[in-house]
Each structure stands twice: as structure tokens, then as C-alpha cells.
Image (tube, rainbow, N blue to C red):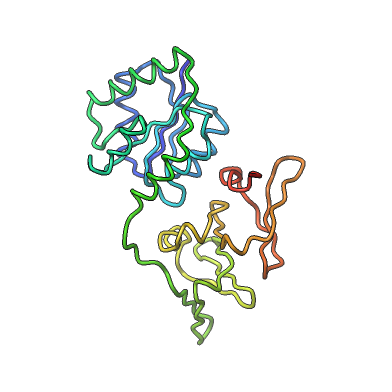
Length: 251
């Protein structure tokens, strides 16, 4: 039995792809549908599917991040709404992609290629370098980055410059903002804050935790393989979920 997961943060494209796969590849078993990249990574670890259909742009962890973290584990097929000009790099790298809205003809072609690879037991390609280039090429330009975080504490409004913040944690309806010498809660979900952070400077290490990368002092892996990190300027030990443990593999 050939298995697959589908990852897309929008319900309709996810449901449409499942319906089309059931029509054109009825023997394919969809073992999980995921709304976020972190969920997709966890599903790949849990179900070990043969194929992962990954939306390129998902909040937090992108489809490119998922594919890079699971390279060699399964065959990746990217779904995207980007135009053909942006997709020239895909053709050069022989990466399977499906342009939204997905056409039946294009899906049938992708299925044929996937079946051929599975029948010959071809190993999934390691496209790490190309995916890094794609990530730079497809990353939105001129995104307005957060420079300050303002938080109300009683009658006071505290101002936190972004370069002083060590980490963010999700706290129910609030986000906890922590610096070396102060902290506060803001009435804004972590997911929205992440969109304004530079992903090169701030790493998501858990669904509810984002840390400043250059503040990481060390990472620990216990006998069960669980990872925690310590930050310079903070005594707190932060948990790393399995979905993001790949960031801390030794070079």
C-alpha cells in the first residue's frame, strides 16, 4: 500500500487535492492531512509515508522547511500558487510541483512519475541546496519586519526593541515576550508575530516557542532523544519539539 500525507494551511485546496487523488489514484492511502508545516513534519515521523504533498508557503514552517528536514524520508511534491516565472527553478531541479488550481492533467502526470519512482525503488532526491535557493527566491520581498514590541502592563506601556528579545512563547490568548532583564505579555497570537520576524534571526523550535538564534548557548539531547535549549541571558530551559529537532543535529 502506497501512503501519503497532504499539508496545506487552506482547507479547500487540501480537500480538493484529496478528492482528485482519490479519483486518479484510488489505491493511494492518505494517512494524514496537516494544516501547518510542523504538523506535516510530525506526521512524516509518525506515519513514514511514501509521499508528502507539501504547500510551499505555510505559516511558521514552510513546505520547503519540511522537505529539507525530512530529506531522504519520502518523495516530496510541492503545491504552489506561484506563477511560472518563479517555477523555472523547479524545472531545473526536476522537483515535482503542482500549480494551483491543480489540473487533472498535471496531477495525472505527477502520479505517473511518482509510480515510476516507487516501482524502481528510487531513493528520494536530496535537494537541500536547491531548496535553499528556492526559499530565497520565493521568499516575499519587502516584508515589513517587526522592530519593536509594545506591551501594556497596568498603566504603563513597555517597549521592547526586537534585537533585545530572547524568546517568545504562546500563552493561551497571549504571547509572552522575554528579554534578559524584563518580560511582558501581549494580546497578539504567536502565529501573527512570527510573520513579522526575520526567519534567519528567529527560529521556531516548538509550536509555541520562537527563540533568537544567536542567543542559543547550548542544546541538550536526553536518552529518549528529546532536545532542550539554553539561552544566554536566561535561566529558562526551553523544549524543542520533534518537528524542529533537525535544527540541532551535529554538523
